Length: 386
Ligand SMILES: Cc1ncc(COP(=O)(O)O)c(C=O)c1O
Image 1 (cartoon, rainbow, N blue to C red):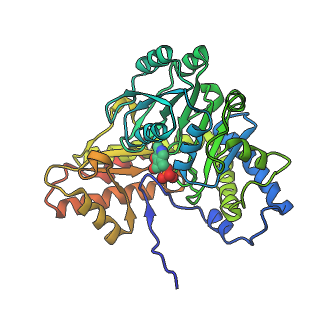
Image 2 (tube, rainbow, N blue to C red):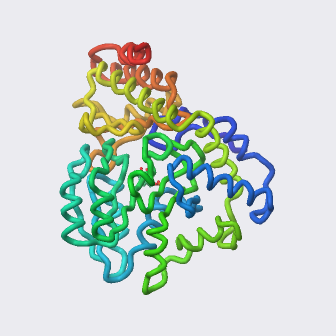
């Protein structure tokens, strides 16, 4: 019999599920054409619009993980002869570059940034004006570095040149403010398992009318049938034209997770993420650890922290899991060993979890020979008291 351990999930995804979301996963299964299910599908789209802060008709969830959302956001608008500008300052932005490089005859212009900081917006705007791309792609919350990308000037430059602004919100939707319409974002995709606290497997996406028109003007069909956003839009529209067998229980779970966000209030939820991120960071610094991301550009949903010299980040991570049932993540790319990434996401973003991470880290670090400077938990408590 299957007996997975009960973990406290404090990596940058997946996050823990609220009991109501778990309940949705064991709800009676309906068919994907059942009127009850189709009603929930429509309500899920309406809830997603609230969380994306958009009026886009084409707002739905693809049956894939966040990476599938990324692929869909690129293969739909781009066709041979097009150019894309990508702001690349981390592992996931680089994945955008790699996906675009696989597309036939698409020129990829990379504007590089330093890991831990956002990509310079002036450089992005200059690149858009110079190369007049079909797409400008940026990552809102770079999970590999913990940096948040600001949007100043990006949408204006895109509108001026006819480019589409594509934004990765896999690590931020539902946890960090991202008003899609206000920011002039054309295609925004996310993942169900992070700040939304639904199980992994769905990629919420929203597509502006401007982007839909650009896709409709393609000279060649979208090269991926399964990720064709127009076909998904028809499934989620009132006619519900068959495209795939919907993952019914995952949609129920997403519906419940989104309902919880709306009940909590989006604004309150975003503030909750900021509060727990501030407490966690104060605690980590009190322990004497060095935070990685630039202080002015830290994304609330992901905290990146460097392992002190002589400490094995992988051994600490393993001990947290084994002894405390607590999951945090290692670094990515060149930071695979030497960095921890801690999520403040959705249902996992709770005071008790933050205090547990800090106390457990303190004990394990001490055992490994690192003398913490002070009490992480006390510093975090002080933030909660303020
Ligand atoms: C910013 C960002 N983009 C894309 C992805 C890929 O998402 P998934 O692992 O759900 O495919 C991730 C996953 O961590 C991410 O953090």
